[in-house]
Image (cartoon, each protein chain N blue to C red):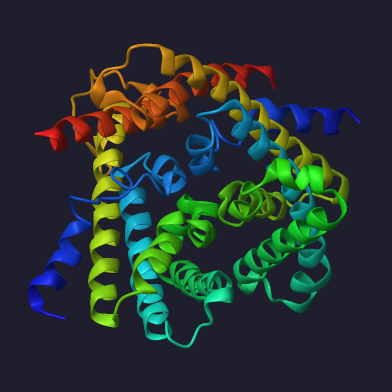
Length: 198
Length: 191
């Protein structure tokens, strides 16, 4: 595999197929953990780790795994790495682990991870799969931090825990509540559509 | 008894799994374009989630907790759910073909529906006893079905209306879901 196509596999996750905007997959964590930038980035990085590791293993084993039971095998591989993330976050980033709550174990059912394993890693080599996993994971992290920033700035008047506006700012609490997540993501999606049309 | 009714109302309306807890949103947007598929998905979720909730809760209290194996809960639960879905599929195909045909492709899709796994984890996290677990495993999917079917009804109307090109499909769906979520947020004062 030549170097240019590796770069292509990496960058397609950052704009052309950026999850969750272009690939409308993995919406649940997108909506649930973007109350603040911090949780958004934490979730994004955890997902990136799982995605890269599972992509490596799936593509390394793609010739051994019988195609009839492939989905079950992928799920076991993904679940293993999710447990790795879960335990290491408990050990090294406990406050973040508490904030993310059940959404860490739920990475296992995140459609992006299984989707990439099935659509990409099971058909391509290890190098390309790493590039794909990194690109998709970082794209997801960027999307989550953008959404998290918007919601935190308007909903709490803060960014990464620091005050943005003066004391007179009235927080627009709608944004950090459940409906704000849906509306905000919907509007961002519409803006992406406008920008992508050219 | 009152506690259980309260728990059921809270699970169906106040903490609606789709609109307030944000679980199971991929099938929510994916299967809500037509009423038929929405009803199929809602039925499949009710069916599988109730069984998965019971099985995972028993596994947790009988095996994982006494043996101190809570750290592999994620792997065990997802395998149980995947196996259960396969089993339900085979069972329905053989004994109730009409229902099987109705649920169609939605059954296998349920394996990766985070609502199923999510409710199983909530049951454990809240330390429910057997009856409470039973109520929550029935009420959460009921809330899922309610929200999904209502949303499908709205979406069928939206198709008729004139939507700006950039907002079409998923974007307008998300904004609509946001306003539905706002109305469900109004139930918060009930309990």
